[in-house]
Length: 511
Image 1 (cartoon, rainbow, N blue to C red):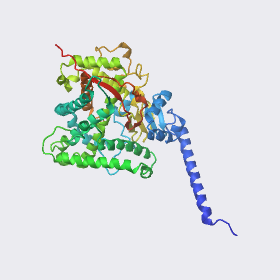
Image 2: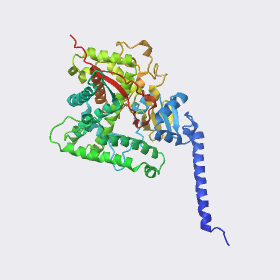
Image 3: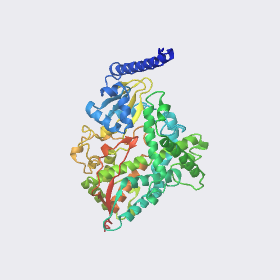
Image 4: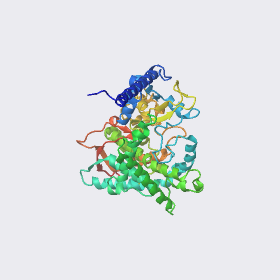
């Protein structure tokens, strides 16, 4: 019997072997070029990460990138090559070189890209002119004057938070609460009110709204989608590996946001909120400066950027305060000694409390809500950052976490010591004199810095002041303490439950 294989049976395995061999040769050649001949070959870093993207991508999709890169900086210095065409900088000079000196480097298109089917917006666009155009329309909603007009709304939602906590703390023993839930509920309700004209009802019902779950999953999809863009041509295929249910949540979030935005636009009453300047015919006539799709996309993303980041910083700061009772007591003394009644606690008055503001600055240093750093690319012709020439297309990361936790930059860098941020003449100890506080830019720098900085700081001041004015708080007995530096990150920090004990205390009225 003739068992000689046919030509077709012989050819297919041969072609597969040849293709596999060519692929192996290509990867090997790319790795050798990246390590030995690439223009970035002089930038230090681990061999695997310099040779290919595999080390970076694995770290990114598992949520460990922030911690891994911080360790690389500790080992290799303040400039580390984290991929064949990417460099992470943890040096103060990087802020000016990347964002302020001359023309700022453009945003990294691998991370700043609208989801499929959605238009670019204020945050995701890499076009600097488009960003400047949209920013002109959005900025009037985030000025100090606008914040003053929005204060009644902010106070009302913080009132509701305090009332709900008072209900739970009723009685001599007080209560144990998970501040991650409560701060997220406040942040989402408040931004919902100011962006869409209605809250999510989280505080009222003391539970998550389904939309909040969609938002969390949208963030994970953003991180996974960014990972696929490092392999040219494979993005559509690799995105299919993301569970359909998760991708659907992202599209559902956008569709629901658009529906709510149109409901807000149809409202006749004048409101002091985030969307009003975009609808103002004097600021945005006929949607010619900022189109309706751009408004929809921007407000959809603002629901995430304006809530998740603030909630995260509040959680991290309170976690630090309860684990450092001496710092918490200083904050209590300052707040309770300044205000006779709770109604005296206004946004303007809180700007002048040095220890409160120092505690927030220290909370932002240790618990940066956008821990992955700020991502840019080298433009046509390349750029020089911290003395390194970066060829065109090089991915550039300004690594805030590595700078924040470096002993070279801060005395006892991993400890929560708000005194380091006290103004001169307000009791700042001498051992903090050499701290490099200018490394801290939690809201970014330059023309694309965070538009909501004033609003975020005002909200954080008010929540912390009202919390410690009304309650004695401490670590919940028997509950696991959270080490913030071990939490995973997918675009933002993936928080675990932070339980604290609260007991209502009414401070003595000053004579």
